[in-house]
Image (cartoon, rainbow, N blue to C red):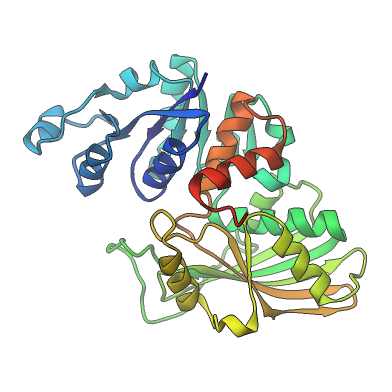
Length: 340
């Protein structure tokens, strides 16, 4: 029996999550919901995803666009076991009322406040603690990247203190209403919201975060200084540990990946989904170890890193798989992310 899934919102995150869900052998994508016609709504139809109207959308607009609809968001919610809310930031809180009325489980995104759900979620970080929760919140792209790395470092050597400077992209590639601008814009929220957000996964983690926005659309980059509890043997021990863990890609010097442009060119060459990079990206050359102090860069693709996390959150919420690593393996194998 496959779990029936709906996706409310079919933009940057929603369309990627819908594709990932549709590929899972233990899930059925019942439909996706859009507020108004768009090229993405047309793509949903072309992919065979039943299209529903949400957010007070006008059925006549879809009809005029030649986009047949299967019903309203209420119709979709009464046909599924769980919904992934991929609506714009802050809209999820209002949508939660719909999900509660329908009596279904719900997954929210990191643009919402943590209290929208029973728990924040990261597959490597706290899968077990999220089993059976009716509402989960997949943390933001940057928080997902930090939480993944924290899960590896905490298990291997322990973490005494972590300082992160986030070099943030100004906008997504398709966004035209903001940035990038010719400048570097400090984020004067000190610390940035990412540190407190990581604490919703690891409450005892001692972490401080700062952020600045730069004129790029490709990826975020984190500059990390982590004081470990126990000293690794050498830097290779740590980078090899990252390599062995799922959802990390560590580039060697001979690969000549100098920065985010080559990372995204690699993603295009690989051709995964939307030519996405769903893993944390690290570099052998970008890692230094000084006794217990680890310094490293990691790059985060803001459009896609949370996609596999949403799939695992569905399994955790619906108790489809009790072991987080097993769920990660299923998800990654189905979407082509597995290196095995």
